Image (cartoon, rainbow, N blue to C red; front, side, top):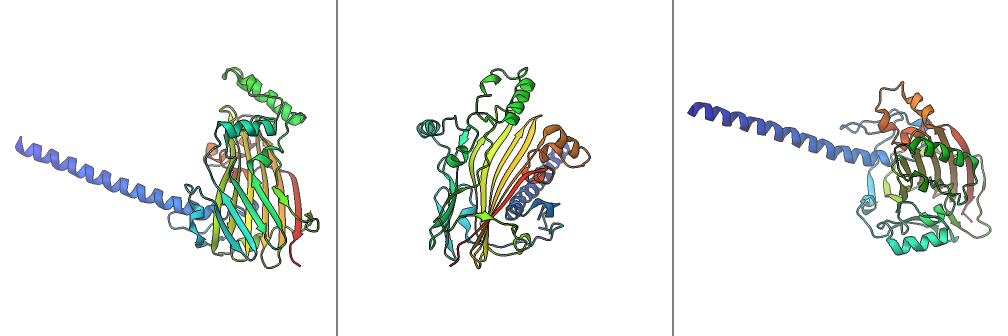
Length: 341
């Protein structure tokens, strides 16, 4: 019996050691994956047609098929911290780039915003958050904030397309969700916006149409990242039937910057919608390029396209980066303004 007890204790000890080793490896793997995800996010702005696999997807930090190089993060490293709540800013070649991330608005500010907008704001509204780019010499600036974005939402529900979708959504959910009719109000309850930023500029610095696209090849270079931030402006779960979210990412390199403002909406069993605004600035030529793209497709069409893939389909349906490769283009606008002498 004595030897049996000793043997039992040794077996328990061995199992504990093995479990500890496995947990340690998993913990290190998760930690490294988080870093790899950060480097992947630094390339979010590149047109998805050139991106077929996720960069730095494995633990070795391997390159993706589009040969994106791994950029070092320099300068204001506090800008990549999700817990950082103070305004961040950096000055590069006469441009001041600023971001602010604060908690969700409280009751009184939400009530005030509701009165000004004329519609109820989303469930999660970050009314104090913003991303701003200012050219101090010319006085030109562009800012992305929640209030101005929501002010572009259809407040009367006059779009027949949106009304048709809201009816379909209501009919598909009435049987399982009580009070669904309260969600479908006489405004665009999906909070879809075509917001492309709030521009303040002299009369001589207006955007004009252009045929010159954002230079994708330059954005593939492994330039140092001087500043990076990811700012959420608002989010709504559409009564637990999907998601509508507006966010803004910006990365600044020594010779250029790229900003992506993305509205993503998934209405379960009904519709996918992505509306992107990209702002690209070349610090040498002082030229600003703004590109707006709208993509959308019905839910079933997307599901059928994904059916042939071996990937995790539910995960892809929650990933706007992957969906952007699938959804057809509905609208595209290109504009430019030169801030040089």
